[in-house]
Image 1: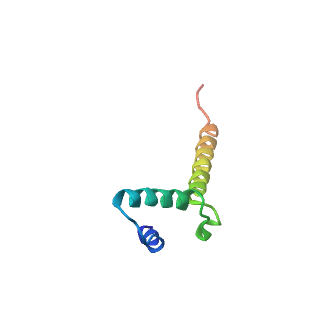
Image 2: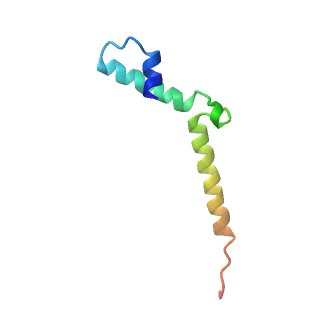
Image 3: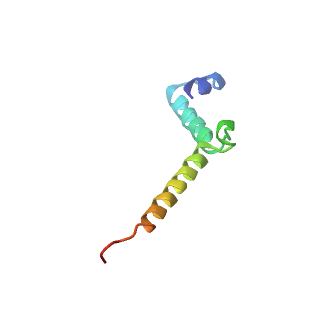
Length: 70
């Protein structure tokens, strides 16, 4: 990711400006840029999708447990 950032940001006047631009780049990369390798989703969307799927899976497993001897 760093190399991609440096390839598009050629003129960084100082370290503070560089940090700000890099933070903005990472935010856009994760939250707005669609990625072909993950079906056109952003990394944030993919993360949320996996989180929701795993939460549903855990709840389904908990509900299917039967209690013996009660």
